[in-house]
Length: 388
Image (cartoon, rainbow, N blue to C red):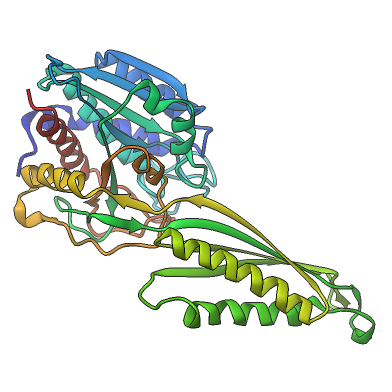
């Protein structure tokens, strides 16, 4: 175990910082208080340059090593936003904002990176430059993409970039990742079926969109079973329906909303094309008009092989060989760090949160015992990748 003495000296302050963020959750790009607290802490730590407002509300801290012979630069990224969930933890520091909570651990992610930034700014025991990236709007707002479009990697041309996420169910002090695709592309679909409204007692005078919807649902589920390779991980979930307001009126229109998760771009293209055909053709077969609005959101998160080994090497130095695995099972969850990995080689690693409620659950809480492990990992990674 390589949680160093500096972590022990800082841990109470870091826990207090995390609890403050937890009490005051903010959503998407509206992380004004959180970003200000992060920027204030970075400046107090002696970080060389602190830039606010990247990608609307992102924060970047620049830390120079004692030397810069190599001219190398690496980026370390954490997310800051919370979720629109009513907290049910009963914690003394539970959310003070009704309907908002840190149900994914971004308060912990920001705290771990802040702890590392403070130590790196104090010791500067590396050669090159580190940028610490605190991004908004990971939860559906593509904050990583917004920071990239705002010139993140043009202003700070990183050679490598790394992310870290907590994992409930994995023991504290353990790490896991894998090379290649480990998290899915996330797409959003809206299906609209338009018929002809009318009285429920006279369906022959109407064009009922419900039979078309039933056929579309069956065909989409059949598509997954019969026109996609069973070894290609994917899911199409229809999750919401809107249409009709009375017991005795056939509605003119029904709208269905859902999500598509795929693990490669070819499959992503195929699913979009097939769902579009199904909606249009089956609706037409029932005398309706079917339209598909298909929005591509986050791309597949693909870890680069060499950088994944670098990340694992740092984790082994912190936690021991037996506590680091490179065979993480891919998940169909999405993560907008994928945008950064599409621009710069790097890796997303997962750190154990111990036994806890799942991410995005009202009873979830980030485990304070993880902070020391995560901050130590970040510092070790910098020392190894930017060795003097």
